[in-house]
Image (cartoon, rainbow over all chains, first blue to last red; front, side, top):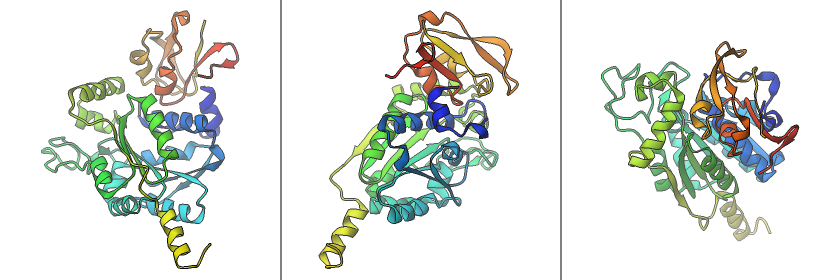
Length: 260
Length: 75
């Protein structure tokens, strides 16, 4: 077993419940490496919702909250308010963050509260059997769109930029080094950091969205899509001037004479 | 020479390491892991350039690369 993996993962609960070739494990490893490089394992708290991606932090030997479907961001907001010293990393999926938790996501971005949201976009509802999610590409045949998806997909990165998140980036599981750097910068950034990760789901999205079941081939497709420009990948926004929510709360209290 | 190991208990046989390694150190074999699928075999570990991609990309943390036996390469 990898020595870093052994240091941060509850080895008694292995093997993980992820399918062979799932991208969630790569995101686990990138997070572990980012936390190890920063040396702040004691200050990290992870929050997750419901879905395959929300099982990522449950294997960490860290403070973890596994909460209700779509409500990971409100729980994280509460945790940040109660314990402002903690660095909070939220793991959420495309259905969790953009569908049922979409409204919470908008408001967290507008408040610019100091969270790091790692949104794992696998284009589908993987855990429940391959239904259409808000991020499913056009014309993809899924269980609930048998004649092809006719809805335009929601672009989480554009949404986060519009609503005022201060760090927005999109990487894929085929870019593990850049992903690790993005998670590190996101934790260091004061304000809401939104990192979208395109992750392969070889079992559910493999048969419908990609038409390819080999995880390595799907990762090559990501590299190809990046070169051709069909998917925008990279760092979109890094604005460290915008004040985060806790700073504004404190400023307001000082102004009203309730705190010195 | 690099000391590369693949954990039989962790490996799920997803075959990502075959294509990601620039030196093609991992090759397919008939050995079964505990999950019941075929796991990679290590050939020519002296070719390893310590890029760390296999460790980063293995979804189950099964691969460990060391420069010296028992000592982790801190890059």
